Length: 251
Image 1 (spheres, helix red, strand yellow):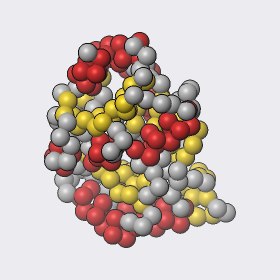
Image 2 (tube, helix red, strand yellow):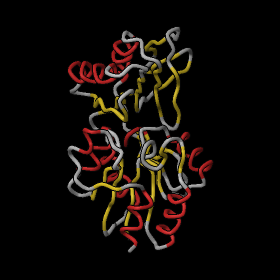
Image 3 (cartoon, helix red, strand yellow):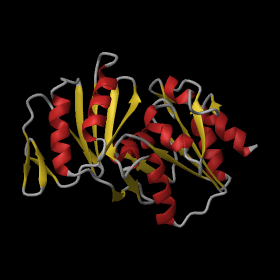
Image 4 (tube, helix red, strand yellow):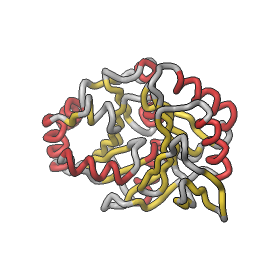
């Protein structure tokens, strides 16, 4: 049995489309007795909904860059959170840069933080516009202008690097997760939880947030040929598409 752990945006979904070739290749991959799943910065409910919309069959979902692991029904079974005090301080720093979009993810969901949002710590929870969250798995900030995301990443890495990883799924966005999380961490934990033994674990992605799983020594990582330059600089194996990668390992 082989396992393919795939990023979503820019990898499976390219330009807003999951190609027919990718969908058919995944069907063949699973029919041959292999496992396929998503490892994304997106939250679980989003992934479930888009897999259903795109008609993509899967065996597992790992959301929030490895911070949320699903059960076999795609529901959250384990989460790795950031301390709420750190989340609160991080949000203050992020909001001061006036990003286009801020979201806070927890369990299977995500909530927006707008310029008018009220955010406070209360009774062991982060409260956003009246919504009480007891465990935050990821923060995301998105900008309209090039360079701002990288500047925020670097500033937050310096201020919060002992507790938080600051990674970029693309040039306009930054994801913040616990230093205890990460895409390879999520994959390994999923294998452990399900007692899976694989002949090979393939990983494929295109963003800075994929680098850890693409370069992990216990996985066989492939970068999309359209990946961010920082990824192509560090990952020697490349593929044109998910379908092309699958065909290579089914041959």
